[in-house]
View 1 (spheres, helix red, strand yellow):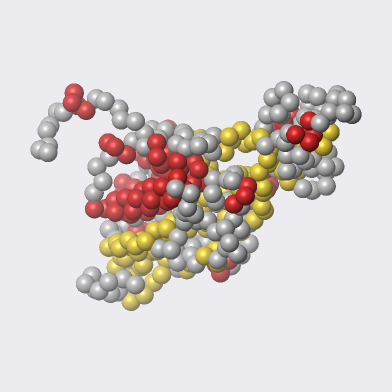
View 2 (cartoon, rainbow, N blue to C red; view 1 turned 45 degrees about the vertical axis):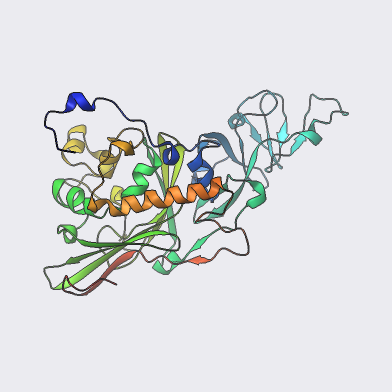
Length: 390
């Protein structure tokens, strides 16, 4: 097709989002895939004496800790008359609804129905919706998939980075995929973060990299190689693990393996939360970019609207796409190879779930394997461009 200038009139239709990958509610293709893997739903520090209302994958839930210390994740609305359990009272065992006192255990079992006669069989025939939880690295994880196929919890080898994990969350008003597929785009690090908005990460990222992408046993990986003025070579390795995990190298270009794992968890089709477990060294190296000054010593959250416009970062580039990515109007190029690979792999795994197969990111027999994280910044003597990285 020949390029046609002044063609706005011919391109007024707004294409629909990509439902196969962006819709995440119950019974949606991608939503069912993501539910097959453990997902963080909150930081443990967010859970206090009162229940915590959550929305995850389009479901309204409530997280609570009963007085014996057990943590439960239940459907938010009481199965009796629909009152929200965020107003419930945690008891020694379970949580009691504020409306009529129906009490539920952490597995959804009805423990008591105070206003019902002793002969009532409601407790034997009904359960409040509930999900299994697991605590890891200061995050509360939940398995929202079929209970009969609950996988073992996966373990990554990021512990080799040293230090204790520090969890934090970043909430974004856009679809989860806009953030996730960005991880496999090494070129925006040079454009957005190193030249257009000034140096937001490190001056070592100012030059365009030479990049190779590859599929791994768990997702997609890229190797971005740059020759530095001091004669060394910087190899930046970045990776994603399906369905929705990334391991991002230190953005200050500090040498060493990735110190952070991130889970891109959909709230609904138009919002998501990225939960991070970051192992911070005593010097604080390896902070993600929202923890670094972005302009004139200001942090991202401190920028004025004009400064956001003059010095945009990932958030501006992703949110400005709209609440969901409209893939059908994109024009992917060679530099988008990694993005295309992520999309292709996700579609493949979504189809596996539709066909009743086990997708990447899930293990239903035995223990989950220790997953190798190859992400990191690695320095070596400069290698000529004709030699492949590896």
